[in-house]
Length: 503
Image (cartoon, rainbow, N blue to C red):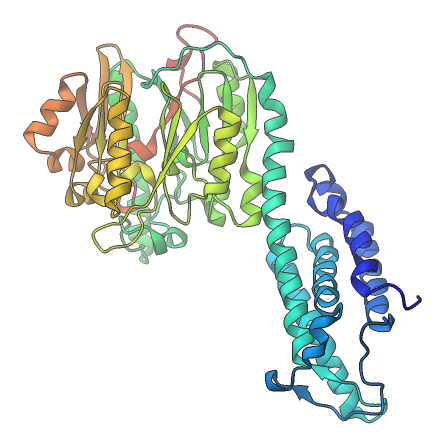
C-alpha cells in the first residue's frame, strides 16, 4: 500500500464513489436487489481488510506479540496521536463502514447503525480480545479511543445519510413533478365536497395512544369491541347524511375487508387534495396507520375529479420522519400558509419539503395540553375558515410564539376567535368550514359546540351557520368531526360529480 498515504486518504475516494448510490432515490430499487447487497458486503470485507492492514508513516500501533491485552483507559491516552492522522482515519473508517451498511440495510438505517456499531465500532476490538484470550495469535492492542472515534464516524455518516436522503427523496420523487402542475386555479378555503371512510374495525388504537391525550383507553372485551365498531359506522352514516342534507358532496368509501385499520375513519391524515389538481400522500408514524393509504381511493377521486399529480411523501416515513396530513397541517388555502404544531407526528424537514413542493410558507410553533405535553395534531388547536379562525392560543406556551401566530392569523383579515385549553380538550378547535347549498357551514361535534361560549358561537355565525353532530364513539379515538373529513379541493370533472357516492 505504501507509507505515503493515510487511511483516510484511501477511504475518502471509496466513500465518495459510494455516497451517490447510498443517497439518490433513483437507486432505491437497485439497492434492494440481493446481488447488490452481496456486492456491498464484499466491498465492506475489502475495506475491513484495508483498514486493518494499512500502514502509515505518521503513527504506528504496537507490534503483535509486544503488548498484552488491555483496554486503554482515558488517562492513558497517547496525546501524540492528536498530531497524526489518527482522528480522521478512525472517523473515516466508521463512516465508510456505515455507508456500506446503508446499502445492505437500505430500508432501515437504524438497523444499519446498530449492526455497524456492534460489529465494527466495538466488535473489532472485542474480536481481537477473544483472539488474545485464545492464545493462538500474538496479543492485539485493544483501544477504547479507536472505538470512540469509529463510533463518531458511524454516527456522522448516519446523520448525513438520513438527512440528505430524506431531502432527495422529496426532490427527486416529488418535486421533479411540481413544475407540471397547473398554474392557474382559484383557491377557496371551504371545499364543497369531502372524502370519508366507513370503518369496519374502528377501535381506540393502542399504537397511537402514547402521544394522544384526547384518546380513551382501548377496549379489551370482544363484545364491547364489536359494539364500538358498529356504533362508529352508525356515527359515520349520520355525519354523511347531515352533510348531504346541507348540500355538501360526500365521497364515501367502505373500509377494506381483512385489513386491521382501527383509525381508518380519519382519512385526512394520509391524504390531502388541492385546487390545482394535486393529491398528496403523507408519511404516517405508526404501522397500522400506514395501512390506511389506498390506491383505490385515489383512483376513485380521479374518476370524479380532475387529478393532475400524485405527490407521494410517504417514503420519508422509512427514515423516521412523519407529517400526518391535515392533522399535522392546518392550511390557509387562500394565502398559502401552512400552520404546524411541533410533535412526533409533524417533522419540520418534511414540512419544508411540502412547502417547497406546494408553494406555501410555514408557521411552526409549540403546543401543550392541560398536562403540559405536546398536542399530537395541529387541527385540534386550530381551525381556519374563510372569515374567521378558531385558535387555542393558550395552548402555545411561549409568549413570543403565541403573539407571532396570533398576529399572522390576524394579518389575513380573519376574525380570531380565541378558545381556552379546556375548550380545546373538548374538541372545540377541531372544526371544518364547508360550502353547502345554504352557503358556508362550520362543522363540529356536539361536544365541541357545548364547550363554546355564546359570544364565540355568535362570532362564528356571522359568516357560517353551525352544523353540530354527535360522534361520542369516534371521539374515543382522540379525533373529532374535522378529523373524519378530508376536504376535496379538486376541480370536479362534472358539476354534479362531488355528490356521487363511492361504492
